[in-house]
Image (cartoon, rainbow over all chains, first blue to last red; front, side, top):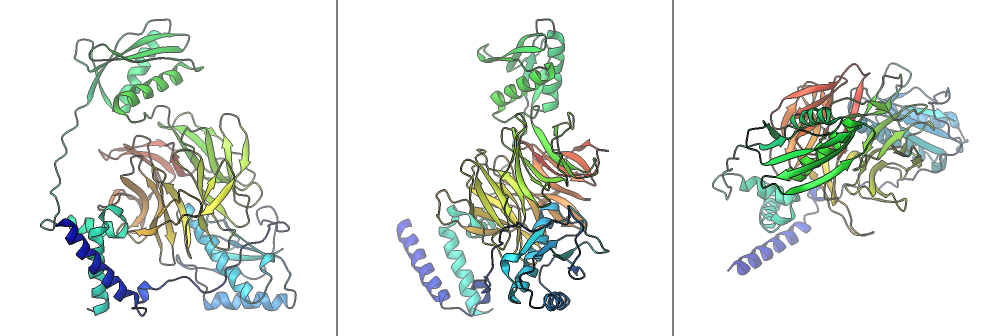
Length: 158
Length: 410
């Protein structure tokens, strides 16, 4: 009796899942993965940490409000400015350092700041900068950046 | 209702009946439905009131016998595991032994006078020996580890930079264990408390290091580009779960400490952090922020290289959840959340059950005691120990700089 019931349930669930598999218009069933190519980081050699040297930012710090890591129009403008300033020199080494607000849980702050730095790096690569020359680091709220805001990404020219 | 959505819900309900044993999202749904009276849910049975085991400490012989006996009584009372009976009262277990020059020879007898164990403790200090004896007694009688020899590792900025410190369960015997040039953070202890894994900034970049507390050597585990942090030892101490970002995204990796190889177990487009192992070592809970605030996720650790692993979201009822840690029995997960604009420590049964805040007002970064009875956390820079059963708590360390990221040896 139990076996028969189980078989019926299995059959019904299989039919429903088959029907659902054709429902590609259901947005919550689609794969959220981005189509963009993500470039792994190259070796860190030749890059200097802002903790050990007085590095100059390539542009004003990119301020992130709230908890997100998506780039805003203001970030886009700043990134375009860096690309324009570099001109044809696509081989310039850059270090993109993320910092997070001091009130965030520490581990989450490290990951969020790294993720923001990676988002900026990805955009720079889309402007055809050499991926192997761009490093990221997420300091979370372990260190404070210079300037009035703490949830920022700073692009350092190396 | 959208007919396709209805089909999906029906499918979940049917599949959930089959997937009860598998847990996860289907098991959660079934558990939620099953908990409703009239839908197959059972009424919760009343937990019988715990009767404390009665234990008697007989006089110790030897030159330091009297001191040993007094210190042992203190340790047993502090453990809250036993009722320490007087000389004429009935007891289920009897402790005795001798102590000379700080060495301790202790034995434990059951109610029939049968010897359960007899051991010699020969560490340099009397207190150290009695803590070890008390923990052995607790483990033999209750099956749970004692806390007398357990350690809490934490970060403090008292030296001007964030460095790693270690203390005992009462906030005593504090020692600084790192002296990195730019600081050290995100510490965790190996199961036998011999190793500390932490993120060091000595090179100016975050690198996960291992420090042997006894031998003093230190070595890098993740000298990879990008950021590494959030190290957590597997229950058997052979693997380290860690967040690394060298592949172009922060992801959770499991590193084999013997072979120095690592495999990626998460598939995140967001910001994963704070991995914590299930006590059986087959699953890892971590927080992940996909852009809408960090939530808790659970991933199965592949037992063979290349084997598929299931990853699913574990709902807590809160929109912001970080720093998860599994209890030593695997039946609860503690985490940091946000309530009324302030940090709070919450506990939720695993796999099913409702979350409850055990401490608000800025409490964060919970870590379970090895026996699962207490949780340590930080609140406004102080270190607290919270009794999960009674709800009572006390600050074990204050005025020691700003303390953060505590982890209790498991």
